[in-house]
Length: 399
Ligand SMILES: *[C@@H]1O[C@H](CO)[C@@H](O)[C@H](O)[C@H]1NC(C)=O
Ligand SMILES: *[C@@H]1O[C@H](CO)[C@@H](O)[C@H](O)[C@H]1NC(C)=O
Ligand SMILES: *[C@@H]1O[C@H](CO)[C@@H](O)[C@H](O)[C@H]1NC(C)=O
Ligand SMILES: *[C@@H]1O[C@H](CO)[C@@H](O)[C@H](O)[C@H]1NC(C)=O
Ligand SMILES: *[C@@H]1O[C@H](CO)[C@@H](O)[C@H](O)[C@H]1NC(C)=O
Ligand SMILES: *[C@@H]1O[C@H](CO)[C@@H](O)[C@H](O)[C@H]1NC(C)=O
Image 1 (cartoon, rainbow, N blue to C red):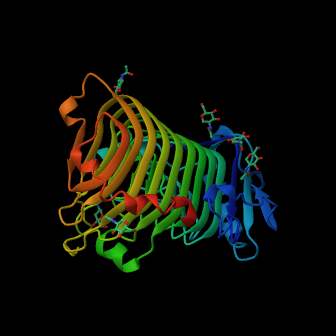
Image 2 (image 1 turned 90 degrees about the vertical axis):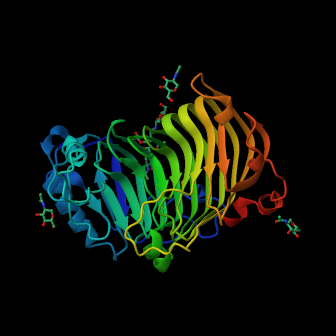
Image 3 (image 1 turned 45 degrees about the horizontal axis):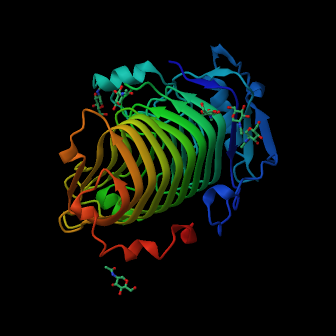
């Protein structure tokens, strides 16, 4: 029943085309102009009280409904002054739904308890779900105890998630911070996220449905973030990636107390690709498995998936990673007729007493090259035959 929106929230609706330049080399270089929208209101005008006690469900509903009516008239802006804004559960929908923008939801332990005991007969709502929008800013905001995803842009372009913190208890099942889903030109920067499952997950559709819709997640930059993912991964790609995920740059990540640092997940039947990914400058502490790439995420929406739709993982570069108290350095289990391809460099992981030197790396159906990697990687990742496919084209030229 508790969803405290603390401090300051500024949420911008509507068409702000070009806020993050189309020709940018880096998604995060472009800041939106935060000029007042033609229609700007404060949540206080809808009767909300930020005392941490008053339930503001109706006020949020009304404000979002009101603002949405201006979405095609130059955009609108909702301002929430500093305070603790408690919102209550009303329906099984998202707190802020950018497609209909008409409902407010509550979150809290109710959801986790229900989910865990399998009594919940509804999909769990996400806090902020924005569908099919262009020019979305979510910033200067604290999210606590979201039931599922905190921020979920789907089919969006030009999304900026900046200076937010999002926290859910380590034991909360499948809570995820930010989930760019079939969206492009996305910047996530200066955020602190700690979740029960993944902190950030990039997705683009599931099996035959994602292949048919064919909308990739592409041109994404994630930088200067502190992440914690108790049961999942600090940053994960997939496993729903059938529309493709490409041109992603991750830099300056600080990952602590997580099960996995960086994860690539897919399966036979997904089709699609994860390619042109660059991970750079990552500090890890207290992580079970630093890097995992698995082709065995065998969850399918139904039995209609195409077993010949093999995903491609290609041109993935991971460099400048340091880690302390790591149990497993890397697990790379690719797909037999579609081996994964990775390039590793300047990786230094200090393993803990629980780790065994013989299984610091686990590799199958993977090829790649490595340079200055410690502990010494498996032979599959030491070949140089494929090394020229990643080096010549700098990722930045695509961003
Ligand atoms: C769950 O949903 C199904 C289909 O909507 C419905 O038939 C069933 O009665 C619901 N069960 C509970 C416990 O609400
Ligand atoms: C980040 O957001 C907080 C409110 O949550 C605000 O006080 C602070 O000034 C913001 N910092 C930056 C750099 O925007
Ligand atoms: C976040 O807060 C900072 C500091 O108050 C302010 O300069 C900035 O414009 C805010 N960002 C947005 C997107 O409102
Ligand atoms: C994230 O954590 C750092 C270090 O504790 C802090 O300086 C920064 O203000 C936090 N940022 C947010 C958005 O909460
Ligand atoms: C090492 O990491 C594990 C989690 O993988 C954690 O439980 C343990 O407390 C950490 N040890 C130290 C000394 O920080
Ligand atoms: C390496 O590059 C050369 C020249 O660009 C090309 O002919 C060759 O096929 C490449 N090798 C691999 C394994 O990609």
